[in-house]
Image 1 (cartoon, rainbow, N blue to C red):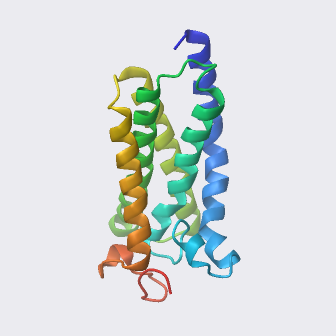
Image 2 (image 1 turned 90 degrees about the vertical axis):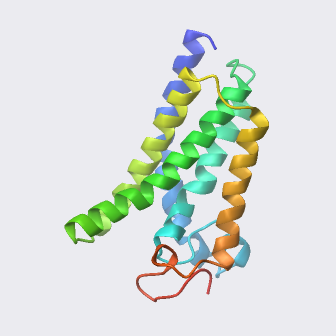
Length: 182
């Protein structure tokens, strides 16, 4: 990738953070707005558990990286292997940031504030996007098909655990005590 197009991809990557935050925030309410559609619930938060909040980054991150590649990949001479490795890293970092940040602030300090919860989503997107792009820029990447398989596996795990979640606190709605889709 040439310097100019790398710079353009970097700008779009930074620009994506607030947009992903807005889209991810919509995914918090999408299930209820859909009339509690099971199809929507498979990819959007269905309750207030930490696990379900992690789904708020799932489709937005996958969508951003995939759409950008489809629209700009050829013109920007993006390396497919490295780009989809970046997607995989971004998705994993975004997903993992949410429980780490939430449990750190809520358990270490014994507080729970909605503004901090919302900020965690923004931090998760920022950390994921920055890590993913860093991986794209500086790594050799992992094979394309491995990246796609990892992303598909993550997606599948979220869908399965929406309908059949393990009965542990990570999956329990702190407000209702329920697990998964109701």
